[in-house]
Image (cartoon, rainbow, N blue to C red; front, side, top):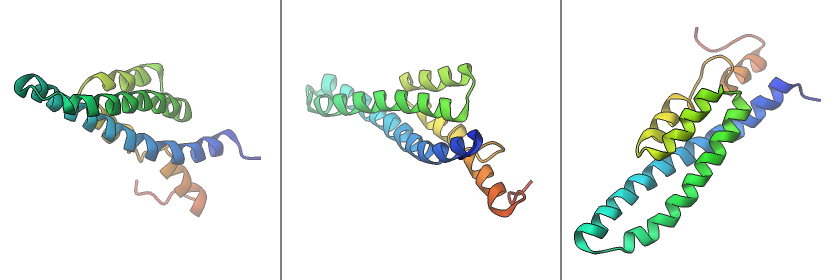
Length: 126
């Protein structure tokens, strides 16, 4: 039976790529929705908001759910989890979450754990 760190590592290899994709999609949909809102009020064309509003809503909920899942899997502190969730209400903040917290390659991340298990000793540059 796999131990806790091995189970968490396998879960992290599934949730991190999904979290990265959802994070970028949510931030992009938010920016597109802002543009569509400007077009709606500036040119009286509400079609973009009608289409992008529900798409962004689903991506927003998915982002919040997957950030909680990643926080549990990676054992993030509450403050980091709250910052990642708070990033969802700022147009470009999920890009920074993806770049800084979801791409990590330091100790304790799935990439480092796999490298250590595969070769017996760390094969990552120090």
